Every structure is written in C-alpha cells, then in structure tokens.
Image (cartoon, rainbow, N blue to C red):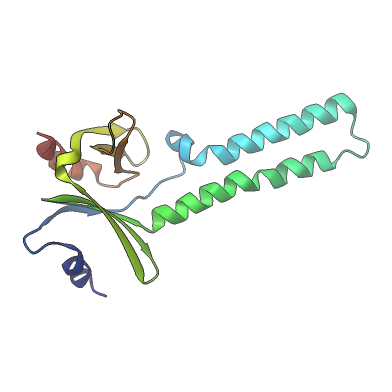
Amino acid sequence: MTTSSFWDKLLEADEKILWSGRPQPKFHWRNWRFFGPAPMAAVGLLAAAWFIIYTTGSEGDMWLLVLPALLVLIPLRATQQQLRTYRATRYALTDKRVLFFKVEGSETRVAAHPRSAMIPPIVQNTLPSSVSFLRHGPKKVDVLGFDFIQGADDLLPHLKQAAK
C-alpha cells in the first residue's frame, strides 16, 4: 500500500494533513518513567538478595541471587511490550482532527479526536519531547497527546494555533 492510498482511505475529502510523525523513545534518564521500572526493579531485588545473604549467610542461599534476576524479567517484558506498541503507533494532525494509528501487520486501527477537544499544548521533558494537548475527560489528568516525538518544534505552532 502506498502512502497516498493509506491517507486517501483515512482522510475526509477536504481534510489536509498538517503534521504526521511517530514515537521514537530513546534510552535516557529523562525517560525514567518509561525505561525505569526494569532497572529499578533489578536494583531493588538485588539489594534485597544481598541483604538476606548478608544477614543469614550464603551457605546454600545462592538461589537468592538468581531469583531476583528472574523477577526482573517481568518489568523488562512490560517495557518491551510498550516499545513494541510505540513502534506500531503513528500520529497525525489534520485541519479537522487528531489521529492516532496503530499499525499491526495488515490491520490499522485508528482513533480520531476532534480539534474542539484541544487545549494549549503541554510539553513534557522526555527525550524526544512528548506533547499533551487533548482533554479526554472532565479531569485535569485526562489529557492525551503525542509521546516521544521527533520534530515537536514543527508540531507546536499548529497546536498553539488550534488551541486559540
């Protein structure tokens, strides 16, 4: 499928794309909420194993070092699944809607939000930047946006203009 036929199927007749992109999270300390659970779990579990071995002795208790290493696989798997989801995600801002795509094989799922739900953009200090700009519900915490996007500087003028 060509890029133009992809957009032809999804966009309305008079709708124009203002910006499109995809998440590209980087392993960086600013992304600790995304990459942090696995390393933090590893440190915590290894510290617990060291403390148990230190206080009770190490005769026959070497399994206590292996068990934390195995348990670290749980948050590592969660991080891996989130990375897989981000690799399948695409974003688009049009003159009428905000579109979120999830491309999995030959299937594409689309979530569309009207531009009337837009609020002034909030840039989060991730690498690359994440931008929240959609009110999803009545609470302040119900905010959506584009995560870990390259080219946030190109997107911000469109968002600021739309929020006015």
